[in-house]
Amino acid sequence: MIRKAECKDIQPILAIYNEYVIHSTATFDINPVSENEMLSRMKDISSVFPYLVYEEEGEVIGYCYAHYWKEKAAYKHTLETTVYVSPAHHRRGVGYALMTELIDQCRKIGASALIACITSGNDGSISLHKKLGFHRVSKFEKVGIKFGKTLDVEDYELLL
Image (cartoon, rainbow, N blue to C red; front, side, top):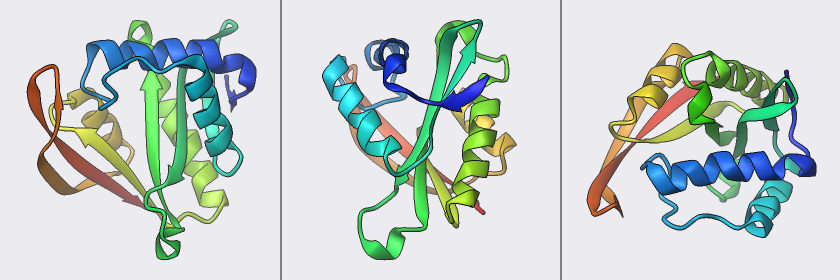
């Protein structure tokens, strides 16, 4: 079931996200995020934009949201998307289902373009976004360092 995220979902959202912080380059956060910080982020984003969870048998196993891509007024119809799925539930269509619903909700609120910023080499995320119709529009080289590794970021865009 996909539904709007609620404050009660913060623990599983935090667990999923911090798994990526600790073990992957999918996020450029280096230290685990606190519950208060994640709750603040969720409240800020969900007060304006779609913030969704995927729940299976009472357990939140993935989440996604959209937010402004850039803060300047001329960009107000372009949103950045984020999606995370518990590693135990990869390759089961959870990310695809979440993003499909997020795209629909972004259309309904008047977004004209969605941007996904993906660390180069994150083949699962790249594949997911291509399947959803996103295409690569840019690559920024050596913009992040995590685990002693220099990282590139690719932007993928979907025009709505």
